[in-house]
Image 1 (tube, helix red, strand yellow):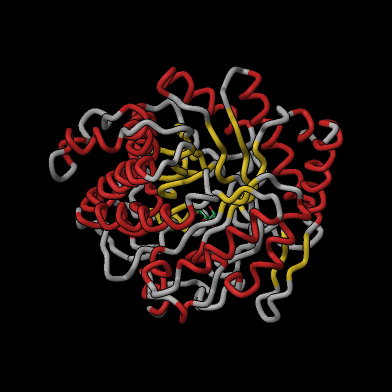
Image 2: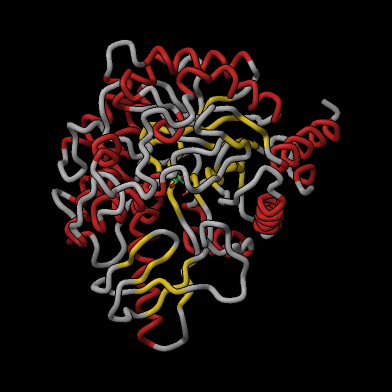
Length: 436
Ligand code: GCO
């Protein structure tokens, strides 16, 4: 187990999100995901997150699982619709107290896709509403919560939710979805300012990133891969890390973009990366491409191709640990001293079964790849496994299991998997070597 070879102050954790685990949907205002899941055909197994893992009522048991796992921190998300509901913030007050009582650092994400159904990222003032919500939360929890994440994966929420329509809010706007990207990034910057005003000094974002591999050295494939990397990676990292959009993008964004970029580029204390795998990209092939549960339409100026000769998860995602090393050393080359310390805010895989040896192989491989990036000089401060529990995997419903802990969605019984024991042994052995 590679865990004991990390610095003693390295932060180990696991991640979840409100909509995917809480349930108790009738006890809060609706989100765009409640509305989307209610539309026939939107969720592959016809399910909704109305109950999910019922974490809202079972959080003491889940915090006990975190304590037994011996993690340092727990990344969860706060449901904006629940905070809008009278008394809704009380749940997070109780959860934070339970975590602190167990000696686990809370690391909440303030937006993880479950937008109040009354709001719309295509509208600029949603960014202002977000900053107001952040202030309410920070004022209530800031005495116990020190580590904050503003926005989770604005790239995916823009692409899947507003360009392709595969996720909530189900808009198929293609490139007219770009304002949703800009307004989420603006919300991130305004959220950072709101957190600073509340005294926060440990703030990050959780952006999804992976290396983009051209399908071949052909010019058409190289150009398609370059465009994909611009759209899915640099469009979200450049404004946050450099305070500027990549060449040619700024003109596509709404409003006074140069003024907005000063907000979006607010300095961060660390930069969160959600890593799952590289993406192999080639020129469009004139037909829709099915990939990892998604349909990439033919009219997009790129196509996603299979990565040959690598294992795949039960979700069909390639397993390429060295892609994490490549991603992080590449970030260090591109951003240099503009790159704050990195935290891996998500890394995980979907496999069936309680005796999930393949998940142990996946995690072991990626933790070793992370260590190689650190040995190459990348400043990484933490690593969070996606996810503590099997949960509502968005448009896949409950068909894809990412948990270290199995959830029986009929009985809601939790059963730690083999990977849970593997991680726990690694984390505890770290403590032994530290002599704690
Ligand atoms: C995210 C991720 C998670 C997913 C995980 C597996 O937005 O952070 O999409 O919510 O469940 O990445 O797909």
